[in-house]
Image (cartoon, rainbow, N blue to C red; front, side, top):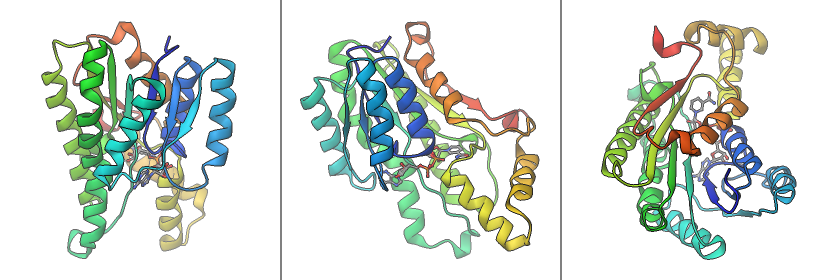
Length: 260
Ligand code: NAD
């Protein structure tokens, strides 16, 4: 379905971003991989998929706190592949603390990576999408884009902001072939969440496995983690012709978290 198309997935060296990148690659898209850490495993996994489909994967190490690098990544993808057809704003970080103890530099980083980066990439990618007559923007928000939890003021503010940005730009694009939507996962067992489970287990003196079940029990009625594969399948649907009139939604995949 995405043969000949190109997708940028920010923060795709790991977790949800990698899951979405793999699902889009399985549809034949070229992939621009982005994110920190060891890029080799993600590049190898994605390369194996793109090879099967006659597509390509390229790595761009743009730092999502740097507007100039974000814009350069979009321009570079347009130069190399001819277009950016799908933009998945997924990169994100977390920090957990009471607001009065929250380090201001952590606040700034969370707002920059989890929210402002989507503004910068959207600005750069939208004109090309409109000109070419196809575009899909998928912002990876969170259940925390819809409801709050304590100790996560910056994350909740950024994710609520990302849902707001999604709705506003979806309306601006409503009569164009570009759709803009958000995905709002509940708990997904990625490094971002594993760190929180490990910290809770250390603080409470409980086994890590027990703490994972407790974490789910507090928020996620299904008592199951959402998976990167499930989120990848939703991203594929949002890129499909059937989703052309899905605009400005914040689609929860949260095991019932925000239904309560
Ligand atoms: P993760 O830690 O596994 O992956 C985060 C990715 O972002 C990595 O590739 C990392 O290198 C990249 N990244 C971090 N800082 C960056 C920067 N400055 N520039 C470029 N890339 C950067 O986390 P994840 O759980 O896969 O999270 C992905 C997204 O999903 C985040 O936006 C997160 O808020 C959101 N989310 C996660 C969950 C969950 O339960 N895991 C739930 C809801 C929403």
